Structures are given as structure tokens and as C-alpha cells.
Length: 198
Image (cartoon, rainbow, N blue to C red; front, side, top):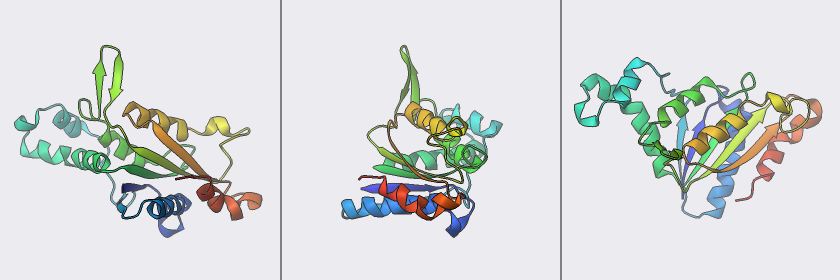
């Protein structure tokens, strides 16, 4: 099994979402002997936010791209190749202001390419990335899986929709939540890891 780990936290070794991701990966590697892990840290090696040059390059046939357009499309091609090569994705999702990090959004923007990772059909859009398992390692200071703040979780529903749009519909969400709440913080990480069956 080839596992792609996406790190999107800016907290380095202190990141709960990254530690939760690693706990999930450890389980996957233990269950699938010979697995390999490819790590992409979009916080320290960010994808550029989309600009006009990227969009022009995407919609120019490959054989007609200028050198500048070839460079503009490079990040997107790289993101897509890494995902296509993986059997499973483990995506670290820290809550930043109730949503995902801008670095994770930029990665998704480069991954979403008409005609390559999705296409429009007469019956609606079809995702073209199929047959892969996705784990979302979600870390938050508060409790968002239930209770009065559940409606403020703009990260998990968005990711489920976007990944599903691309064809990635087999998604498991693991949560280390309440990491800033005294009664929850001590057990939050292990509870999130334990919630995942591989």
C-alpha cells in the first residue's frame, strides 16, 4: 500500500492533526506489511494560490503551452500525480477559524482539474479519482462533532464534498477534539486514533 500523508498545520511537531495523522498511518502500516509513505507538507512547502497564469495554463493543451505555462501547471501536475499513485490518503486537518488552512485549500485547488480529476457529463459532474481510501485527521480546540458548535464545522463538510466531487467517496473522519478544553485535552489525541479501524 502506498500512503500519501498531507500535512497542513503550521505548528510543526506540536501539531495535533499531524500527530493524529501519524497515529492513523502507524495503524495502516502495521496492517499492510510493506507499505510506503509519501509525505507532502503543504504548510512548509506550500502550493501557490491560484492566479490567472495557472488557469490559463490549465486550459491550454499540453502541446501548446509556453515554458511559463509549463511551469505554472507543474504544481498541479505534481499534486495530481501524488494522489493518483496513492492507495490511501491521510490528510491532517487542523481547524483554523472554523475551516481548513489556506495551504490545504491551495492544494485542493491544484488537485481540482476539469478533464483530469473530474469531468462534466450530461448527467452532472463525475469524479475521476477512484478506488482510494481517505482518512481526515481533524484536530480542534473545541467540540464540533456534536452539540451547539456543530454548525460551525465548515472544514469537514467542505472536505467531504470536495473529495467526493473528485471521486474520493470512501472517507473516514477521525477527530482529536476539545484539545483546548481541560476535561477533554488529555485523552483527545488517543481517542481520535482509537476511533479508526483499518
